Structures are given as structure tokens and as C-alpha cells.
Length: 190
Ligand SMILES: [Fe+2]
Image (cartoon, rainbow, N blue to C red):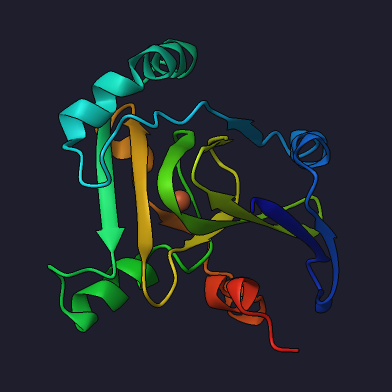
């Protein structure tokens, strides 16, 4: 289930959890994060090709491309990652685990699996566990990090504008190391 955890930026131990989707939307709107739930295309096979996925979601994709001025989309799929070595997997994960910003909006739609977006704004750290059917838009220049987990399992539609727009500009703040990771959120220690 989609959920949000809110911490003070100075205290990873005190947390407020929100599970109701309407409350999640309202809370995230305060930091200009947009989250929607799209109608999932149930006719798509689990191993559907990218072209079939993009066609199935074409209406939503066109709307988002128009609204954000994006010029390209793709589908990224990581599932236990058959085709990547553990080392390459760790590299992919680590690339987005440190706090960074982009000059473009970071916009994703989760077709399946899950990922953890962590937003650092307004003195808070807000962790958003995205699941299948979730669309999320993180505005340009928002401090954030993303955890795909130790065993990545997700398929996403990604949206792109200019080539430089999605380059990660690291803030140099190692705050992300103090906060729970995706695996902690999925299997909390009792
Ligand atoms: Fe990012």
C-alpha cells in the first residue's frame, strides 16, 4: 500500500505515518509534490514490451508530457535483476541514494513493484512508498533521494525533458544515511 512517513529533518526516530490516499495527496501538496493514482491497465501481461506499455497508458502520458513540457518517455524495469551483477545493481541503487536535485521535474508512474522517494524540504524528511498505480511528480530543484531497495523490484514509466534535466546534482548532505531505507519500510523491525 502507498504510504507516507514524515520526520523532522533532525530526528529519524520520531515519525508520523499517513496511509489514507486523500490525506497523502493533501500532505504532499504542501511541498509541491503531486501524487495521483492512475487506472492500471489490467490487460497488460507482466512481461509486456515497453511499446505496449506506452500505448496502453498513452492518454495519461500525453497529458503529462503536455503539462510538463517533456519530450520523451521510456520504461525502466528492474526485477531482482536477472541481467545485472550484484555490483552493478548496487551501483544503480547508490547513484540515487545520496541527496540530490535535478533541473527538471522527476516524474514517474509505477506499473508494478515499489520504490521509496525521500523528499527533504521545509525542515522535514518525507518518505513516500510508491506502489503499482502511483504517479508521482517531484518538482525541479527539490532536494530528494530515491531507494530502489537491496533487491529492486519495479517497473516505471519515466518522463524526460532536456538531456541535462535529469542529471543528479548532489547537495553533499549525507542526511539520507540517517533515515530508513526501502527495506526498513517494507519489513519494519518489531
Ligand atoms: Fe532524483
